[in-house]
Each structure stands twice: as C-alpha cells, then as structure tokens.
Length: 370
Image (tube, rainbow, N blue to C red; front, top):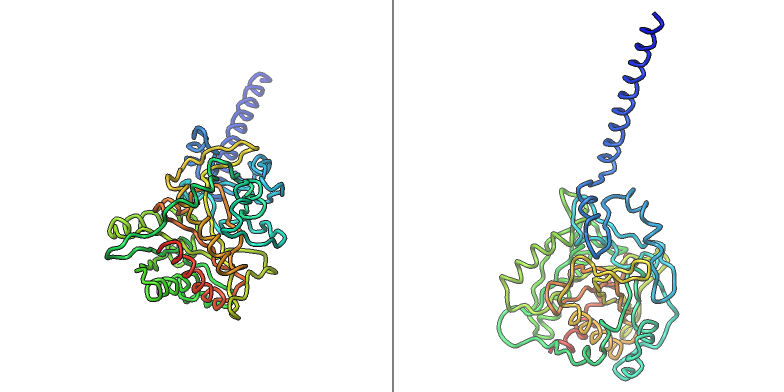
C-alpha cells in the first residue's frame, strides 16, 4: 500500500514538472512574440563573421548595451546611446533609424570655420577631428578615409548633356519642423526638397528630379524601421531609368534637444543651419574597427563631396554649416559616387528657416557641380 502510494506520488510529481515546463515554454514563446523578437534574425546575426552582431529587439539590444557602450570615441566624449540593432521588419541596412546622429551629440565650442585657406591645417587628421568633423563614437576617422589631396582633386563636375543630373529624395519623408502641419507633406523635408529642386533647375540650370514618395509611412502610420531598404529598391530603379542622373541627395532634418536652435543669419534672413553627413561603414567595437556588413564602394567620393561642399560653404556663408558628421553605417550613400545625405536644421527650426536654407545650399552645390 505504501509502495503504491509512493509510485502515485512520483507520477504526480513528474506530471507537475511537465506541466511547469510547458507553462514556462509558453511564457517564453509569448514573451518572444509580445516583444517582437525575430529569433531567425537573431540566430543569423550571431553567425555574421567579421562584423558587429546585430540584434532584433529592445530587450536584446538593452542586454547588449553594456558591451556596445564600451566603444571608444575619437573625441574622448562619452556616448549614451551607442546601440546597434535591427528590427524584425528589416535587415541590416537600417541599423540606425532616426535621427542619424546622436540625440545629444557634441555641440562643441564655436571655432573659426575652416576654408580652402586652411588646407595646411586640415592635412593634420587630429586637427580635422577637433575642428572639421563630428565623429560619432560608433565609428572612427582613420587615415584610410582622410587624404586631403585626394579629396581636393576629385572632380565632382556634372557632365553636359540632356536629362536630369540631380535626384533629390527623402528616406525619412515624414520629418517635420516646429510649425509644420504634419498632415501636409510639403510642410516638412519634402517641401524643402521641392524648393531645392526648383532653385537648382531654374537658377543654376542643373536639371533636378525630385522624388516625393514615402519610405517611412506604412498603412497610415510612420514606420521608419526599414525605410532605408524600401528607399534603395525605388531609388535604384529611378537611377536605372534615368542614366543621366549623376548626383543623389537624401534630404533629412536632424533631431536635437528641444532647447537647441540650429539657426543663423544670412543676408538678414533667419536660416536653418545644415549638416553634411557621411557613413564610413566601420563600426568601433571596444576600440577595434570592424567593417560593417554592408559596404559602400563610393565612400571616398562621398567624402570628397562633403569635404569640398563644407569648405565652399564656409567660404561663402560662414556659420551656415555645422561640422560634417561621420557615423558607422551605409545609409543611402551607396546610390551613386556623388551621393550626399544632408540634414537641414532640426525639429526645433521653423519650416521657413528650413526653406530659407535652400538658397545658400543650392549656391554651394552649384559651385562644386558646375
């Protein structure tokens, strides 16, 4: 009798263990789906050789944030948002969502804007890092990407002939300004791009195409995850259909602290400051630079273009541009050799200030393209 009771007790205990195991498995699976963890993407990324492991969910990236935040920085300042991740909706092309810069990046003391007259000083990469660039802590500027003579000698002039020469588009078309009507696309960066296209075409004779399609808006909702991938499919097709296009401009606006105003005065007109942006396809992991899994064959021409544009802008309109921002990934800069990502002001600027910035920006671009 006692023996049978013992066996029955053991059976009940085994059944209870199985029940608990099933419940735990259910809770685990539920947590995966509720947090939208893409297990497949997680496992694939764990196998990527020679590059950062890219995680698919908030919980995963927070768990990995301690390691990521150990990454060093050329400028010696700390980065409190060095998170690299992918969404379950996208691949590794869109690892950095919005904004492309750190939300609280370095607003360093005002220094004299370097121009072509300062080339000798700019040959020193350490000087360039301190005065000319803002280097995100997720990457680092090395001599491989910094050859001043090569940047200056790069011919960026567009060739003569019929057809559009410049394409303007917006990976994040939903970006608006302080007084924008969020329901009117032309009140934000798309309207800024329309203004720039008009000035380039009608003032400088540079035929410009403006694509107003949206890559960050799905089913009536803003969805920035995957915007860079959706952009690439469409823009690559436009470039195939229009082989005369030599320049691709991805126009954004930055995101900053609410107490920051990126505005200057040009000829008595309040004007949003702009910033040229480059992706180096190099990730700084604990002081070691790892090639990003998606490379850009046009980095050197990209960087020559922003370098020449920055020096030109500093000569023509001092205080119009912020320092060139360097970050780790590819973004939209692999569309063409002459590709630029340009941040026009931020969410704290008025739309009028952003629109006003297109006159000096067009003047700068005409100087390096004609």
